[in-house]
Structures are given as C-alpha cells and as structure tokens.
Length: 637
Image 1 (cartoon, one colour):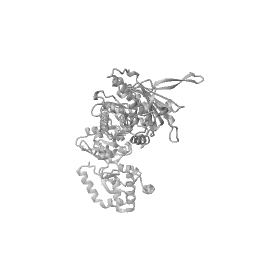
Image 2: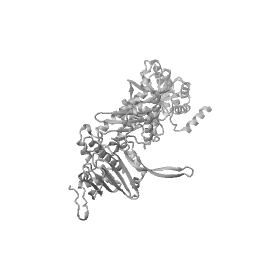
Image 3: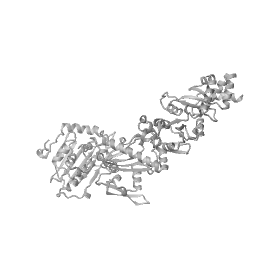
Image 4: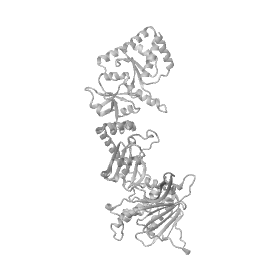
C-alpha cells in the first residue's frame, strides 16, 4: 500500500484498509473482544511498549538520550467534547510505521521489534498481534493518532472512523512520542459509554487492568478539600497523580515485603475483611517461568458452596491483567485458593482475553496444584490447630475432590482429609488412625450419622468400642463417598460398623447365632413379611443393650441412601437393609412367646420394633399414626 497522497486544496485522500484487514476490524469490534473495558488496557499496553522500545534502544544508541524515570503515560478526558486522550513519550512512529502498523491490522511493530532482539536483551513487551489498538473502536466513533518518531524530524497524524478507512497527513507535534485521541460514542439504551469520561471509572480501570505496568500512568484528578468544617464547605483542586502501583508485590524481594503487606494486598485485592490463613509465594524458572502469590482464606466466601461461586486465579502477563479469574489454573478441590499468577511465557490468543490451548498453562496449573498440596501437608504436620481450622471450613471440598471423577485424584488428597476420632474426640488424618491401630486390628472402622451425638448412640457402635477400637465418626454427607473412593489406606480396608458382616464375633458366638436363626427361621420369615424395605430379619449377638438395629448389605449404606433421597431427581438407589434383633435381649423371649400363641400381637410387635430401628437409624416412618396407635395398644395391656 502506498503512502497517502495529497490532493488539491490540501485535501487528504482516505485510504481503505486491505480487504482482509477490513473484515478483521469488523470482526474485532463485534466479536473478538467481549469486554469493552479492555480497550484502555490495550492502549496503555501499547504505550508501555513504546516506552520500553525507546529505553532499550537508548542502551545501545548513543544518539538517544533517555532517562527512564522521565518515561510516562498520561491520561486526560474532556466531557464536553467527549474525548479521551492517551499520551506517551516513547519511541513514536514514522509515517511509514503509521501506515504499516495501523493501516494493516495484525501487522505488529512490537512483534517485529521483539523478534529482532537477542534472547538476553528481550524486553517484557506486551503487544504481539497488532490488534489491541483497534479494540478502541468498540467505544469510539473516531480515533486520531498523532506521533513523532525518534527517527524522524516530521510528525504525522493518522485518523480513522472505522472500517471505511483512514488518512495520514503531516502534523505539528514537537515532542517525541504518541498521542491517541478517542471520540467516545454517545450513550445508548444498552450501554453508557460516558463512563469512559469519568475520573473514578478511569482510575478503576487502570487499577484493575494496568496497575503493574512498569511506567507511571498519570492523570489529573480532583481533590475535595474541607475548608470549613462547621459549614461543611469544600473546595476542589486538581492535582496530577500516578494511578498505578508499577511494581507488583509478587515481583518484590521477600525481604522487602512484610506479613502486613501481604495481608493488606489480599484484603484489598480480594475484598476480604479478614487476614488470609496462609500465604504461599513462589517464583519458578524453567520451560515456563512464572511468579505466583497465593492465599488460603481464613473463612469461606458467602457464596462458596453455591453455583454462583467462580473459582480461579488472576492471570497476568508481564503485569497486565489477562483474566480476572482463570479457572484452568486451579482444580476444583482447591477452588477456595485466591491469588495471582504472572508469566511472560504464555501463549495469548488474538484478543488477549482468553488463552489458547497451551502446555505452558497446563504446566503452571500442575505446579500450582502441587505447591498448594505440599503447603497443606506441611501445615497439617507442623501447625495442626491452624490446619484443623482450615479443614473445618474447606474440608468438604477436599473430600469432594477425593471421590469426584471416580476417585481419580484420591491419592493426591487422601493424606489431607480428616475425620472425627471417637478415641481422641477431635479430627485426625487417616495416617494417625492407622499408626495407632491395636495389634490384630485389620480394618479402619467408621460410623455415619447426622451428628456426633447421634452416632455415639447407634447400637452398632457398642461392639466396636467394647474391643477398644477407634471409630471414625462421619457427619458430612460426602464422608462415606470419600471413604468409598479411597477404598483402603496403607493396606487397611474401611469397615462400616453398620455393615452386616462386621465380623467381630468369636467362632463360638457365630455358631450360636447361626443356630438361633435356623431354629427360628419361620418366626423370622413371618416377621420380615410385615415390613417394608427390609430384605431380611435375623437374630444377632453384636448388640449389647439395644433390642434392634438396621444394618446394610452391599455398597449403599443407609447414610448414602439419605443423600440420594435428598436429591431433586429420584435416582431409585436404596440401601439393602437387614433388621437385626438382639438374641439376648428380653424382647426376643417375648417375640418367641407371641409367635406361638398370638400371631396378631406378634405382628404388632414386629411393626413397632422395625419403626424403632428406623428411628435409631434416622430414617422416617411412613405410617407414624398407625405405629403410635400400636404402641398405645401394647402399652395399655
């Protein structure tokens, strides 16, 4: 494409974008960028690139005299003319560069400059595609770029109103650098473009997306000074302020950052009113280099266990915010972690909003997952009280991670989960349970229920406690699913105390029970016929003081059934329940007598005892009125 030609009477001919560039421009304005706010990030990033280029050239070109502390970016706005202006004193652009870089979309001068640098001297230059500039058309009807290059004596102005084309003509700019003026669109019913002419909004956008640009971003801001406290009179004055922090806290040396600095950053960045429970800082060099600053909150966000909660870490590329919450950087079971990741080695897509499928991102995510896990393991070992505090808040999420995806991550998490120990009266990890198992104990015993007190009262617990075996009390809905996914720990299988085959009786006790069931097979069969949801009724010697209990057969326990029953859609998954009757309890003698002389009364006792077993197990009674009447009849006799 040739340079713009002047026509008669000083009129400058408008040049058209190349056809492919025109299509891309239209696509970018309407499709590529989904968030209009990022236009300012893109223009500031381009200005930062220009400053970087000038500074790095000055290191090898003696003709260029630059002091780095004088390089800056300036913002200003005019509400009356609806203009927003971005100015930098960087390297500027020649007429040819304006034609090449702005006249052909995706022709990036930044990328060309970066490719011509040696590996050792490459600057942390942000722009790579030459498309970010055009995001400004999302919010403006007209863009005017005036630039004076460090390599030229003449300045030029590039002007465009969008896909129709652009003009380039001489200008009268005296200072090296570039000035971009945006004519902001009028407001519509769908969007208020005027917010980009608001001081407070601009400050927030800079803080959010460009806070860590390494050059100062300045703007004249209004201060309200109290001149008369009694009359509540204020006087405004304007003052130029630097809007950005420039050096992110994660890039500072750890010796220069205090615990209070980390706490304040966390509370400000993630809008928390409490200090974080744990700070995890790391700097990784390798195939994919990055810095990360992670925080484990001291409490769960109000929406953490809802569908509205969004996990993810803030992702930066050289200090420029790319994604506010990059979900790919955290597995679901560590979704409670907050923090930032900054890398210059990521493959960014054309809009710089999303990431291409890249091994670099996957590698960072894998490293972060490993780092969090090791830090939690260390906390459990060296600071148990803090870990217990953490686990009471986020333990359910770890347990969910154990059984999610068919237990694919159980080996990563099984040493992090904790359960309530009957022996210690507190939460303990599985490793501690196994290390204290009694000699000859083959299984890890557990019992499930709605609360610790209700589990303690379960009839099935007595037999295990009598042998001085510890029992893990499971009270979270996810606990049994977690245990089931782990399957075994250090070659010790898990055993539910409500399992029909608890197998704690002696051979002599087993034989006695077997004989009692055989001798009373007709009684037990008729008993079972009176009940619902029970596969079998049997006498048992595992009970001590209680007359009856419900045990289960197979993989689905009573507590699991409760979880399935609570789901919106009836999955039809039921526990295979067995009613066990204490063969040594006086009620057994009563049942045998009634079975011989009064079958109707026997049937009443059967229904009452079954209802009692359901109540103990925390299950509802389908016919409470009938059972109440039966109890009254029996008592009144």
